[in-house]
Length: 332
Image (cartoon, one colour):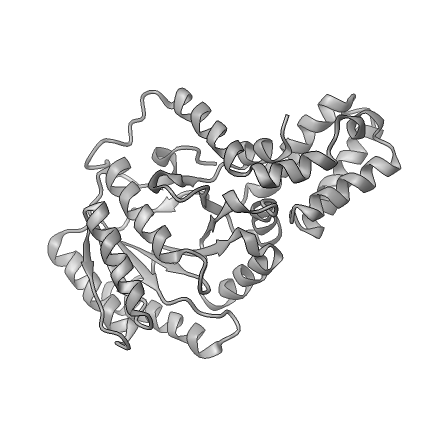
């Protein structure tokens, strides 16, 4: 799975115009990010580590397996994912394949990471312009995620980005995206409050084609996954993209607020039934004890988590690496 922006962004045969993707000192950056990740998910890690004491891995009896199961469920790893992981680890310990507490802890990390490694982990930017549709419910951080992603696409890959302000329900969303466009150095197609979202998307694609933009990021309105009329609007936006380009969005990313725990899992499931969700951007991991939801979404829905937000800084949007995340979550 991708661990750097260079690995995350699939440009196909095209080379990154800015060549900034070549991260020569990857290893120091990885170490630095791992420290930052551990610090950012400290609430989740401390809550889980309190249950996953060294004594638990020393005994590995029936009570220990039950405690491990409870700890993972409390961290929102998910009932199904937890059951699969604990059952397999218990079997491997009983069969002698895994021996000793330290080996069991290390194997736990591997099993969690394996379950979270699913689907295509890269962001498909091969077409030109590549269309990235960003969806989700209200308050998850969609507009901020779009802005940060635009900044990274320009900084890490030298790509030219066009933003489409298709959240036409909130004037504040258009203003916020405009601020991000200025900060990231992107062009933006704005909208009037109440304007048809499909028309905004059509205009943004036309502008991107005219100006030779590499990527169009579409910030859609927040919508409850239970509102069928609003979900149909997303389907309409997809039809507009197909009509204009003869193909659908390259990526459809759902932004999920990790603090919502299992509700975020349900959101991803329902959105996945309405549109072809290709990945998840998981936000607010720095403020929750439910960080295991990243593993649950990937493990239970088969939708890869591609981006994680671990802070408010512009650089705190990062590619999701299942192994590093599982290791940071379980702790030493």
